[in-house]
Image (tube, rainbow over all chains, first blue to last red; front, side, top):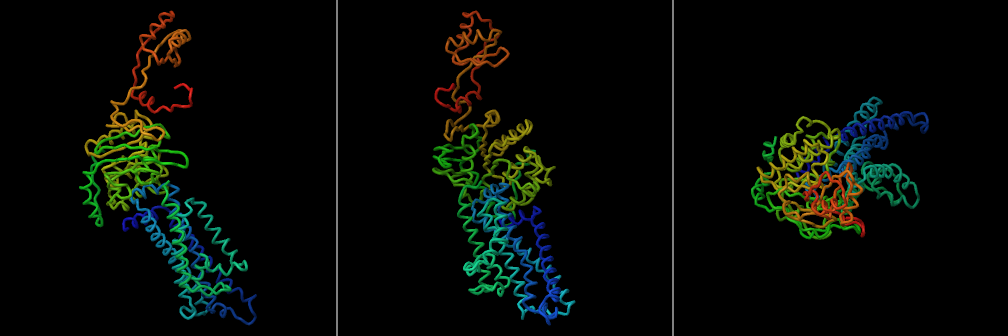
Length: 262
Length: 329
């Protein structure tokens, strides 16, 4: 297994994908944090009368929202997970890979571990970006960050785990849908369009909280959402997201890896 | 250059057990397929195929395109699952090999590369997976003559360079068995000569077992000890090239009177094909009978020669598609 982990890790480091996507998710996080804080600052004008700006920024919910921006790396981690798998089928590196290690389940396991590590790297980068903007900005406005009392730290920890699990979900999707373009577009469409739409449809939105995107949101910020059936706890959200990732990977193993390797 | 092929990979710290298997491996028998079949939907690509590749020999795996060669090799390598039958290497199915990369090296089509990865990095990825030291990547690049292109992304490689890199990948674990699917594809004549020399060296000096597929007999004719010939998924012949059953012999005729000669020969029941510039290739008749028929018809001949049957003709005759009923053979 150590051999496979080294091999899979090298595959990641020897193409440009990982740092291209790293730049992408750091940039998206920075943009998200800046626009979030700026809108909270500017909402003073149109906000509830009598509530001063520092009050809005000092609210724990606002601070958690700013912290949860780090989870924007999640979609990048999913895409990286998908590409790490589908690129093997696209460029047929699946052949030498399975020739060196015919136990296909072992290869998949190594892929899941390495993808999760890449996801965690992205998560750390995005959390640091988040903090690097949020901490000095709020300090400059004289706001105290509610690290523990307001759950900001829990949200940051949740974002770290959510992004790493996102990469696992991506590997699962990739091994299930071997076609790279179909898998990437399908995942983007699902997480950015389909799930948000489902969340606003009556009767469906009660079950919505169990879907991968919503479960991942619960992992980051369990209070958010406001579903009729109540939101999942952070632990439930985390386990459910991981469960989805492993479910996809398991289905992919059954459907793709037990068949002939192209 | 071939000297380097002998260098054994150095196991890194974690593979002390793998090193021990190296000695046991040497005594293992070659490749055996037994009643191997593969169906794709309703098409039977490989049909009840049994053959043996003896240890330490170079065996040519021949057949026209679409004969089922690649599918058979993929089943031997565990990439495809047989519909029936089994294939073993040294007595074990590929999936059950203790250390596949050190037992078998395979060259499939030369397309299994990420285009953005350099040749050296490509090899190092699989050095890690096979548990051999990274310097093996540089050694095998040297063996296939690609040291100068080690840091070039594979996307910029020519087809011939990709074939060499495929071979380098197969050699990473210094395997005793090599399985090569059309390795000469994309190589220029010098490249083919180099490949022949390297494979012959690996078999003779290093005692490796080599199974090499081709649809062109002449590509492998000079290096193989034995051949396995298949067509339409079935075994046609297994043995030495010398014992390959003879095809139909042909007579070559050169004449200024092509039409008269064709008529005279056809009247004797021979099949005549016009090869242009007065040359005719005649089958179904001996040289003596052809000369007599032309003499009787008062046709002038400039050349009359018994062509015998070349290996290539015997191979073509053996593997020829019978075609629809009534069509000329």
